[in-house]
Length: 313
Ligand SMILES: Cc1cc2nc3c(=O)[nH]c(=O)nc-3n(C[C@H](O)[C@H](O)[C@H](O)COP(=O)(O)OP(=O)(O)OC[C@H]3O[C@@H](n4cnc5c(N)ncnc54)[C@H](O)[C@@H]3O)c2cc1C
Image (cartoon, rainbow, N blue to C red; front, side, top):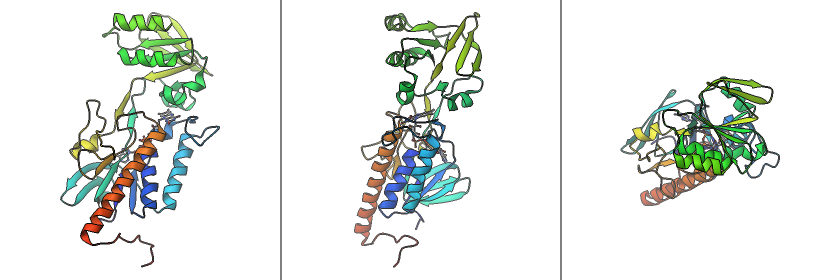
């Protein structure tokens, strides 16, 4: 009999929210996390409901984690390296040894495709380089905005940002695949400047980014958005045989169950709006379905719920 009702891979907003729900369903949940999440990169979120004035990403994660611990969730700092579906559940290989569970929630998130610029991490911390206009473009209203992008996706992101500023420049990074005539016309119509020379130098001084193009042109921005997309961290799902779409995002049903029975996915690695609130909702849906399935199994077997370790018998 496995030690856990469910193991959650990933201790970001999706995984920790699932852990809160499982704990309150009086289930034994283990959260395995390797400390490389997107939520931890957020300098300060201002759009997460319930936090007027905003909250730093690491503080928010610490609060959700504390709440999960209050309801009995256990934590393991480790990296999950393999996931297999066995006859009676899942076998997880981790940097700390093997773990088994009848249900698994994959909440491993996605990785930002960061722009290849010097000092990116420090600039993200200071909000000079940003990665998510839905998250924080409100904070740069009226500023000089540069967008590093490729193809139509870069064009769409630049267009999105015109809600916030009239000074928007798309820095197109793919000289081998120039933008189509339609894309160029769309940029022109929206008053977006197009810069096509490759950036070979970037200076970040105080609160300004100075980008020097190959032709020696000089551009100054208050903020640069990287619009280079995300890479879903769905390798473990592939190993377990679960289906993903062309962009490697997990395919799930309305309960967040993947194509492999008992394996759930929640958060940024599922196709949809990559936001904390969505990740939390998906974690809650997955946890609730797992609890209902465990109850059905217990009914069928004439068993009662497994007692928690500190529960009086
Ligand atoms: C700079 C920035 C600013 C943002 N601002 C906002 C904002 O203002 N508002 C908003 O709603 N959203 C914002 N976001 C998006 C938000 O961070 C994500 O939508 C959210 O973190 C998704 O939660 P998640 O739990 O799916 O993934 P994550 O937060 O990425 O957590 C995934 C966890 O899985 C763990 N993990 C992955 N693989 C493994 C493995 N193999 N073994 C063990 N552990 C593993 C990681 O360590 C990580 O802790 C921002 C993102 C960035 C980068």
